[in-house]
Length: 236
Image (tube, rainbow, N blue to C red; front, side, top):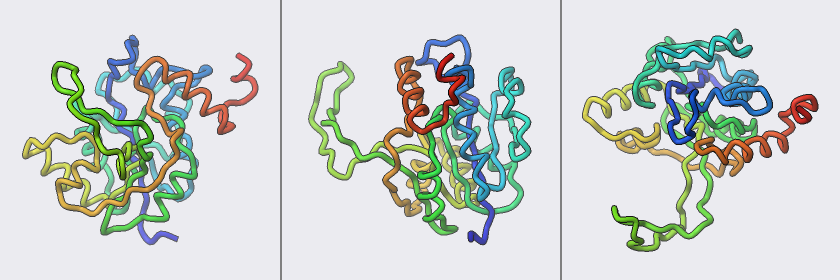
């Protein structure tokens, strides 16, 4: 039993322009259900997580229409221009210190297995993230699109989410990093800059992020294999 609260933060103020959609990608549907609903379900259903904070764009007009929006564990805050701004906004809304899991809004295939893995490594002194070991040959290119060299893939990981950190440390480090103009691509990058030790955990490779149109079908296949699509949805 953990001796401190566990929170989840889902930054969902982005547009997702690479999808080429008229609405933010987190509101695209898989069998009549929004991506963000699949994303939130395992976090909201986990009894170890006290509350889930969702950071939305000021002009968001879609989230309130979702059935999941009325969940008692859900707290909505106003997000910012960048991901880090949205995460920081959510962290400021949490009153009691603890450990926070930050998860991408467009990763609908999160499983309890990855949450278990993270929480078994929870600490108020260090961080942990889930990742997927790189399997393909990696190439670095120049600005002209020409290959410069092959990158050694040994011990190279794709960083996934959730990413887990002590709340107060993440809040102070993010705030300082943004103030100093540090490029923050994910929470781990900020905490690396801040000098925190972060454990890489072997997460599930089906925990994909929906970024391009072809990812939608892949996410549907993974959700189906996880048993998260009911029969009426599968046959619709």
